[in-house]
Image (tube, rainbow, N blue to C red; front, side, top):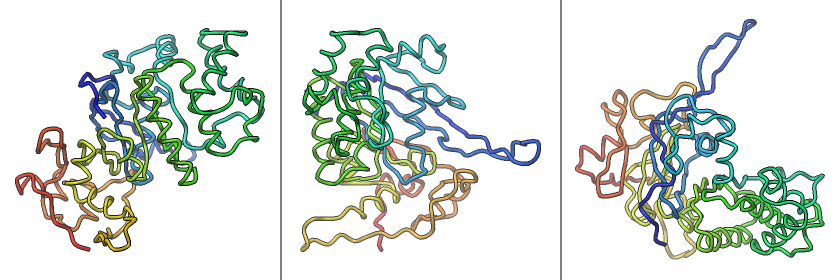
Length: 336
């Protein structure tokens, strides 16, 4: 898969803290540091996979880019325009360029609306089409995602999970967007259906020139669809690289542990599983220094006091790890 180097989306020093209030007077007693200083870009036409454990901040980043949440600080540039400084009218116009495919196809579709109304709603909201023109566009979109035109007259409960997710994809495509956030779009589906939806997303990307932020926790799915992969841990990106480079030579110990958990279909082949001790820290009170040091098998004194920067070790391969830095860009050899 090839992609142009021109960034369509740029995220610079992005923070999102959710305040915690308690007591009779609802005093501010702390913050959930969901996204804590993140930088990355997504080139036009590529797919950036964003992976990490639950609670690492992946979905929050997607919603910040789409302006479904307001950032605490930082910049988000879409096609060179800073969306953090836009007013409501400008954001509304921007919605035509950016859309989202939600995780749960059972919860993201209104059960009281027909499929035709669900897919056609963005056309009416943005004044793109109405009447027969909107109906024709809805049928065209349904065919594009592998459904039948007559499905427009049915309700969501008449469809399987995979078909419902195709309806969600058709709705996202209705306004002809450039950029789509795919928020774990296959995690609620059976494995056999997951492959069909992933193949559909790839076909649509090649036909329509789409750019994806693909959020997931399943690394095997991410490897199949992504151009580059970013790994998150407690609100920060700890490694960012080209897909093949990351899977073949992961630098960060956390990435190595995640990859060791991917099942291998060959029963004769055995991969050494790296089992991390402890639980993922709370984003309310994250550890000092490197946030992974409380679970890292190669952590040393510096890791607990100094936060490692996300540094480029080979062209396009970034990691935030003191061990890698002190060993000249070499990955640690972890054992179970």
